Length: 253
Image (cartoon, rainbow, N blue to C red; front, top):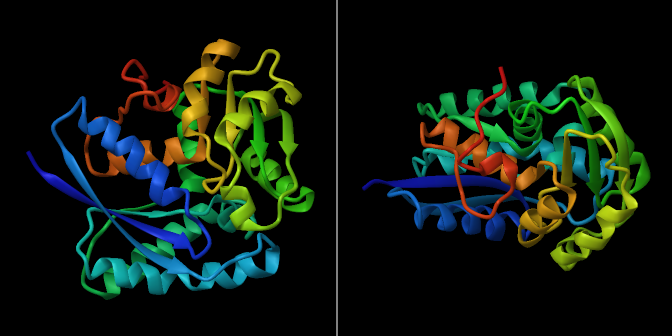
């Protein structure tokens, strides 16, 4: 039985990724033999604005270098909107930049971003038409919607809750999403992203909403866990974490 080190590059005001990621992987420990420890480095950000997100993203290279000192097995960039607000396809640029910084430290550690993980997770679900729920102000929400559409998905609907303060996003009751999703047009979609944001808690609601809608439901955080597990060459499963971590899921052809 091996213990894997999971590193996260986290906005300073994000308190959800250091709870939901461990919760999913602790759940996995109950059904698979691997164990996990968790390690973070933080980038300063309090308000979810374009200016703060851009400044924060520049600090991500420092965080990658710090986490490389811990010889983590994988790193996750834990802010979807920071990536998606920088321009279409930026998750590929960010990954190259971060892995380059790690290489400068003489290490080789795979990096995933919640932005890239969401895109990959939806593809692996075989989704074509999706609906998105997110906490952002409308201008940033539009950037996220456009980003996902640019990756080849048809966006049926998106709902922006318009919460600018990042701690207020984290303070939401995740079960409020059970009611929030009723305001989202999900008719005929292949999948619903219940939280297109890794700061807005959603884990306790994923299975309930999925059962209610009868279609795959996921979150940026759940997709991040799937991407991390795959990079560590581990089976990407976890209980009660929605469709993307279900044992029955097989990558789409």
